[in-house]
Each structure stands twice: as C-alpha cells, then as structure tokens.
Image (cartoon, rainbow, N blue to C red; front, side):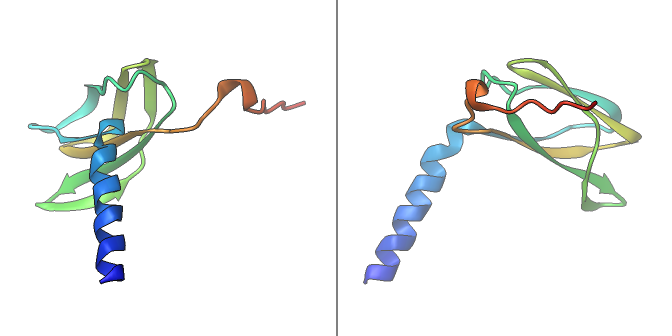
Length: 102
C-alpha cells in the first residue's frame, strides 16, 4: 500500500544517511572525553546522555572543537556518557551571519 511504501522510503533515507552521524558510549566513567568523529567539519550537532544509578538522562555540557574531526566533552561530574554527533548538512560558511556585540 502507498503508506507502507512511503514509510519504507523514509527508513531507507534515514539509514542511508548514517555516514553523517556518529554514536557511541564511553566504556568507563570520567569527566573529560575526547572523541574522534571523522566527519571532516566543525559544524556538528552533539547530543549527550549521562548515566546515573543505571539510568540515562539527557545532559548539556561544554564541548570544545579541537579540529574538523575531534571534539572534547567536559562533564561536571564523573560519569559514563552516550553521544550522538551529527554533521550539520547544507551549512555554507560564506552565507553565515556574524554576531556583533557593541
């Protein structure tokens, strides 16, 4: 049926697009994590979850962009984290705007 075809096409698109996303989980707890994503850009979206007492919670943490392929995440407390790093597609640095604070 037509709806099933649309759903299958969306699933194919999502999974074919995996080359722009990296996911992972740290094997041990820590406060600082350096992650190589190899996406060839500093324009990435990073989502983080932290583990606490066996449960996972979304969190926000400072992220340092070391180079086009590496980020560093700094947590306020020692914990394990899960991360999803996605390249921002269609971003054109020549068309970006500059924030000027006077």
